[in-house]
Amino acid sequence: MHAKFTELTPDLYAYLVAHNRPPDPVLRDLAEETAALGAISMMQIAPEQGALLTFLGRLLGARRAVEVGTFTGYSAISIARGLAPDGQLLCCDLSEEWAGIARRYFTRAGLADRITLRIAPAIDTLRGLPRRPEIDLAFVDADKTGYRAYYEELLPRLRPGGVIGFDNVLWNGQVIDRTDTSGDTAALRALNDFLVGDERVDLVMLPVSDGLTLVRKR
Image (cartoon, rainbow, N blue to C red; front, side, top):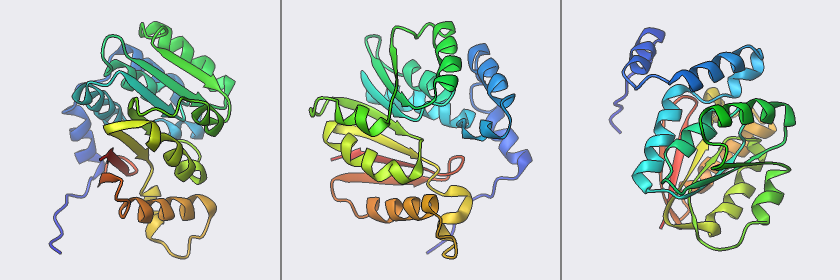
């Protein structure tokens, strides 16, 4: 197989970010407030991921979206901004502390009436949704050991042609380290192996940030 890829140095990554539309003041301030939380801020998506989520929503003409793992709200705002004018986003998270930050920025972005944030185990929230294929776009960025279960709950509720995105599928390169048998790494490795052979969907894995897999329901 011919290997054709460009390694991203810090300078080249800065160039890439500079040649995407810059985050507006809402996202910029949210990123800064999240960074102030310390090491946990690594859970926030990269700015180019946010731009891609908005782009995907607009490309799909999405009206119904679901997010599993909201953290402080950067990805949720990105998704909601890509929805149709009457679109709605359901967010799932467990932390009221992080949700408090997210809700402030949802309001500031003018999206508070378009985003519902439920503080509960995501698997319970998903199982409580009508089992109808009406979701256009979903984004999963939560506990890695739960990814497969979230997928199996989301897929029947995804319309044909709808898309699910999974973040962190390269896991800082640990997915190819067979000596790493930790729960998160093993779960991501198993998910990646499963999805590539799942005949229910089309798939592309992309080297965006820490790896992003997009599946489209057939």
